[in-house]
Length: 299
Length: 273
Image (tube, rainbow over all chains, first blue to last red; front, side, top):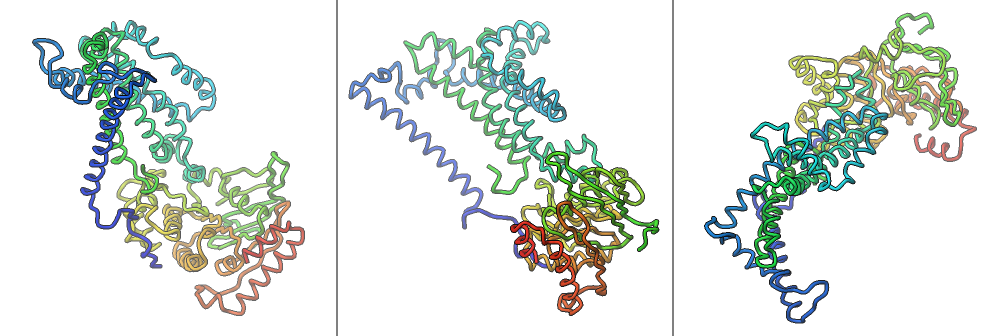
């Protein structure tokens, strides 16, 4: 019994490439795509202004500021006697990141717990799932003021303001996590469930030994969605809270000056997008560390 | 073995299983008794209920009538006591666990402590000769190796009874024959009683102390053939004249019962031979 020839880690690497080389290659690709998009932006601008086209909108310095105008805006203060915009935005981004991270954690935990509860009861699934789905059909902007009014007074001083924004972010976050956790927990191989039955395993043991590990790929694809949703939720949550410390406040502020200085709103959007991407990448990284799967099913 | 043998590992009396959906009688009036250390194969065409019979013994489904006992207990009590291990056609290993930790799953469920688990897993790895692959993941192994892990897992807690549902059905002929030899050597070392479901006549004859031939619609026992080939069985056993006689006996019993087979089932049966 020596079929050892077929064993050994399955490798799909291209010959002669090290992990470092592959990481560099991937980074170069990302940079190339970003560069191409910037070039496309400028090319579009140039073509539309030169040809005088006005469909779907007239192109000018307000509707589409130059890439370099936006880039330069980072280095200049938005208001007199203030540090450079990039410094201001960086601090606002940290504030929003704090809200989003807390919202992501709350939403992730609540979402996962709901999924675990629902997978064990068909009755609860029938009873609750429609409301869970329904909760997401209400626009977050309509919920946000109420959450602020309900939650904020109960929060201790250090959580005042941003704590209620985190709850709003959690409201956007929990939904995909619940739905995918439920699906993931149900995805356990029926024969594996039978095996666990032959070991007389308790529900609890089946949950942690079989169902949860089976669900992880589903849970992580939900967490990727949730990561970006939590950032969006935090930014939107800041609007009705009247908070000026985060990116939401900055967006409202720069919106008012858009016709004069559009590049500042664009700069804020770049930072907001960067935050969303950073959250997304953190989840991807966590997935790499946690999920052990055949290479071909790991994305 | 007599009906009075009180030490029967499995005793089935007048057992019938019907599936209400579709009014199918999967098994009718099954009587079967297994003595300790027996190796009994169930063979028959698709739809003869051989897998159903195995699943009734394993308490994965309940009989409609009649009685089934395992180690003198109800199948449920036997299952709760860890009296049997099961191996399916697919290994059903947990992708996120190494080979060692897969074998340890039943031990964890039974509450063994870490030290005992580790010792037993090492023994089982040695038994199925996979010591070198303890820290591999299932998807890094061949189909035959995966099935050996499944066997090690099923035997890890020393169940009195090993239930095997076409365990080598998905493997190529070469691997299957090698694993047959290995299974016999494991069986001789562990002293388990084995119920082995298969489509292959030669596999059934090669492995078993007794072959139970089943016929379909409704699933019944068509006959039982004692396999008097001496153990240990080797590669030469497959070439012995007595082996061919027994294969022919089983085949004829199957064929006689196969008269009312559907054409595609007859084909399957041919293919299995």
